[in-house]
Image (tube, rainbow over all chains, first blue to last red):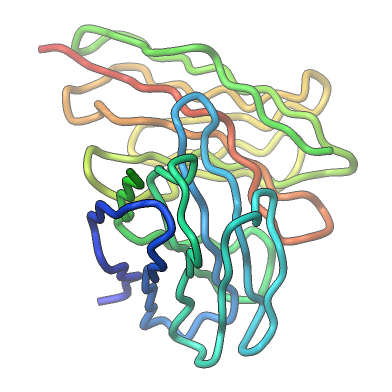
Length: 114
Length: 112
């Protein structure tokens, strides 16, 4: 089954404690990205990756890091989380072909930073 | 820059009612337009898309027409069901580039 998986699904942490949210896809997609979803703001892109070792900033990259060492994985790293990073996070992937190709989204990770 | 504006929600309807969720956009050139749906507790799924002016996207009884002259992509369904209760997002991808820009989302609740 084609899917994007994220872990953990729920996380409560404290300010300053480094954390990583993992994302993995089994569709051999080149393009992967991270979004955060906040009420009234829709989804905003944090970072994206066009392929292995190729990453770039999205609209709201501050306070986040990513890496793309393998094609299937695209972890999101919060080195020093702060309360304003409390949000619902989604990972997505698609082929690197036409821009109209469907993006596949993971189930989301709900993060609370106290 | 690119932007997407959706009608304010939430929207509450009775089963079998007609649905319209308005979406307008700002973008240069000829973007591709999408509607995504998010069911409770799940990630987003593509509902329909249109890639050029006057195209109509359709799926599961939902339709939306790409109107270049009014920069709109309104979502419609003739008869909603309880199972259509979800959050609906309008989005665009510019003619150059790969980034999806989303609207703020519209919560739809359909009561039996």
